[in-house]
Image 1 (cartoon, rainbow, N blue to C red):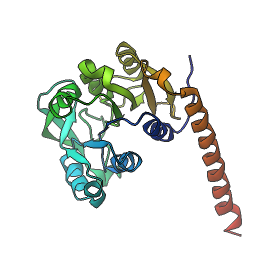
Image 2: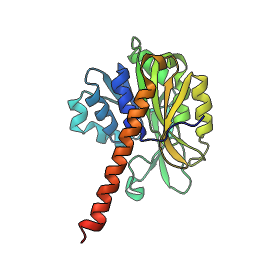
Image 3: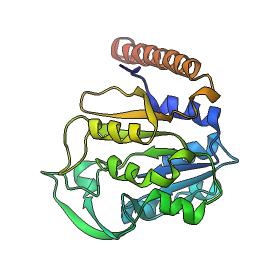
Length: 248
């Protein structure tokens, strides 16, 4: 069954407001911006940012808003095990993207490897948030989303919803694609409810099937679609103005 195509970031934030998770995990935080937004939406909740790239991690720590909103930041690779792992750092000055590095190797992009601590998400939760019942996940880990979800086994009932970046076809060596993630998510009792635009790489939002009846999910999706269409119309008109009016 097809799902609506929309701006998943808008939907994710509406779900935050509706479900009010106690703890929000930003996995593959890059610059901490999504953690900050989550903390602004849910000032009473705990927000935790995970960033495996030590360069990005140190830059996040220097962000004054991270301290302002009391966001916890960990230099950890969230994955399928608690073992130390090699992380591939791609020079961001070359690719013009701070978030391009990954646990996986990207062919054609020279990288250097560093050792980082690894952790399953359920291990981390049991250690730091053992009493927490309501979690949400923002997952953007450059091809390693499947490995993150493998670590949900014993806490799957606590996760209300999550967003994860997927690829239809491999970009990184040995990565698991959208079909693999969909199968794993379904085995963990999560259902795909929306996806972003894009032919090969895009974000997907999943919801815990045990939580669906607690809120009017169809209404949330309708409102999100309407907002996305309005934003798209404003963007079109703005670009039209820049192209034809401001240049005249």
